[in-house]
Length: 62
Image (cartoon, rainbow, N blue to C red; front, side, top):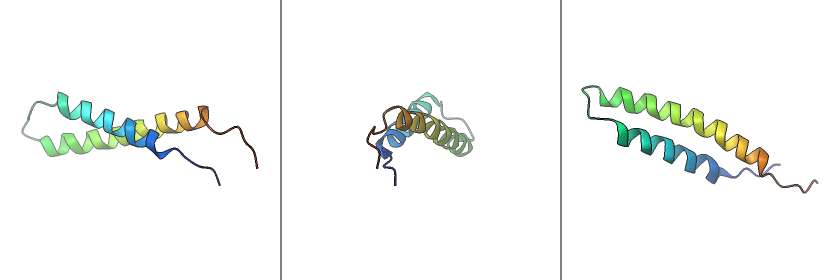
């Protein structure tokens, strides 16, 4: 079983979501924008987290 570095996913999600929320000026439909921002942050964190897991994976084979 491969070990994933879950911290990669969490850090990227927090960065993308946090920066997106900071840039939102309070519009009338804040909840919908925050929800779509959360979905896009999840997608970005999946891509970047997977890439970092592949690049920095352990070279030790079982």
